[in-house]
Structures are given as C-alpha cells and as structure tokens.
Image 1 (cartoon, rainbow, N blue to C red):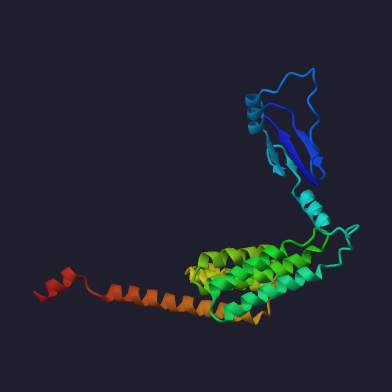
Image 2 (cartoon, rainbow, N blue to C red; image 1 turned 180 degrees about the horizontal axis):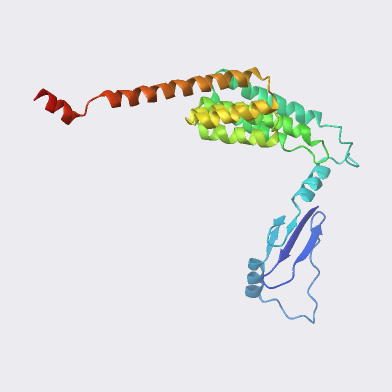
Length: 249
C-alpha cells in the first residue's frame, strides 16, 4: 500500500492511495472518442507523483514507511508497546559498529568509516513506535566513532560535521563536545575548541576527558601567545636596516 498525490499545472490536487497491483483498466466506452497519444503523453509529462511535495503541503513519507514495515512483518497485527525494542536490529547495529571499531584499532580508518556509516544507516531504520532514545543512543555513538576515524585521516571538516551531528542528537553527552573540540584543534581554531569544551563541561562538569583536553588547549594557547610576545619584542629591539647602516658609516 502506498500513498501519492498528483496534479497538473492549473488543476486542483488529487490524492489517492493504492493497495497492491492495479487492476487492468476497463475497455473504453464505445461512445467516448479515441485518446490522442500525443496529448496523453503531454499530460503524463506534466503530472508528478511524489511521496512529499512542499509546494502542495503533503507528506506521505512516514505513512509509506509504516506501510512497508507492516507489509514486511505480516504476523505483526498491531504496533507493540513503546518499551519493546527490535533486539535483532540492535544486534546488527552493534555488531556492525564493533566491526568498525576493530578496523579503527588496526589503522584501517577508511574501512572503519564505511562500517560506521552502515551501522548509522541501520540505526535510523527503527520502527516509528519505538522510543526515540534507543535510536539516539545508537546513532550518536556510531557517528562519534566515525568522527574519530575522520580525525585520524586528518579530514577535520568531516570530523567536525559528525561531531555537530552528535551534539544535535544527544546534546548532553560530553563525547560529542570532545569530538567537536578535537576537530577544531585540527583546524587550528583553538579558541573555538576551548569554547566547545566549556560547553560540554556545562553538561558534565566532572568529565576528566574534557578537563584534561581543556588544559592541553589552554597550554598550547599560552605557548603561542608567548611566541607572539617574543617575536614582537625582538622586532622592537632590532634596529631598522637604514639606521644600522648609518651607524656603521
């Protein structure tokens, strides 16, 4: 069963749904004129059949997804309670993530990223009646690991994008803020990295991972500032070339 809607320019919208294969059309009435093939082709070209249409304000994506889930589970007479989770899906997501972890540990970051991506794609396939927290926990963990893999490949932009996704999904988890700070350090944005860590500490003030990393960032900032001061002082005390030439003349 699927839901779509169609409309041609200048016409009113029509919404329909179908169940299974369409039955063959009945023969044309003898009193009706024959259909012009060229005109029919033009009509077919101007129609659109979409699950979602922003212009028309309709969205059947979730309805059709639920339909596919029910069709693929014929023994499921009605959605189970929200506290029931798909154990089989959980096992598949976990095992795929662990495959990525093993690849990451052996330095195969590209292959690890592929497994993390596969695990993320499976994690978002949870049925809509399950509690959203299960998907958020699985997805945030997988994307966090993928951010680490991108970081090791020095793809700091992708690492930052994944870290931002983790924070959007699970804002109060310190790991997302830690991943963001590391990516920002890789991009040489130390001040932004320190701010990212401080935001994470607002949620987990005792996180040793964040506290230690903040100390490291501030230490690097102090060293860079000391170098700038030393360079400025050296420039101020070094005589200009013209003045030095006049002194020796």
